[in-house]
Amino acid sequence: MSYEEEIKNNNAMFFKILRESRPDLEILLNLFEDGKINIAIIINFIYALNKIINGSGYGKISVDIQDNEVTFIRGEEITKIIEPIIKER
Image (cartoon, rainbow, N blue to C red):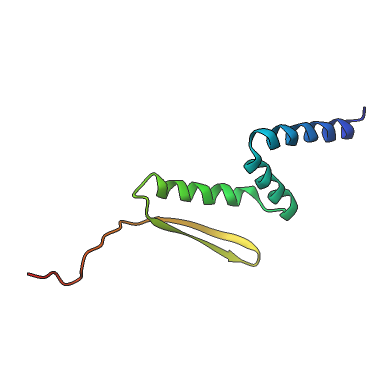
């Protein structure tokens, strides 16, 4: 068996195991491969999301893109308050 055939077989086995155990991860991997998306971008987005989740639970994430490159991923945690501007006496 050639090296290329061995890699092809290993990948097929890996995706079979992944499909059976974590179909959600298989979908993500397929999206990365089909769209050629840089996984580092997704990792940084999840990191920003995780900071919000582990903080107040409120916030926003913005992604800046210029010339088909992600230049910034900003995760901003906010404090949610529901208070009137003018307090009644």
